[in-house]
Image (cartoon, rainbow, N blue to C red):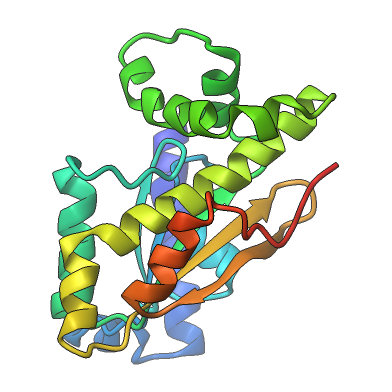
Length: 218
């Protein structure tokens, strides 16, 4: 049996198991999705959003890209955010990075892989803005970890500054933005900043130079 056929067989086994445990599971999914969370994470295959958050299908709306970036010219990401906030009415937007991220490593080392180099310029901009703090760390592993953390906070600020979130807050909608980082070595998520639920708190984080990281890595 080919690898692809194995995946299809895995799907059949999974669907049968879900139906056995909850006969109406897929019926409920088909009728409506009503997630409370939007996850903006990395495309890394080691970071499966639903699984590491302990959520079932239908409970988490997901957007993933290399290095979990929120770029104001990225209509894909912005469209996901707009649908999640305006239509699904999610209550939480969670930007989740992870340690040992290939995109972060490539940006820090100034490695070239072709087209993706253009995308990773955004990470290099974050590095440049915080070069003194990051480059002062002796070990490369510590520099990679610190850039991973600061990049999450930079994307949290970017989320907060989008018209999608600004308009939601202005209209009184209950939306909070979070910054998390996932450790692939032990499977644990760590929060890097308190939830941001208003423009003033978002501005405070931005004005502080992203100094509110709660978890450091030596």
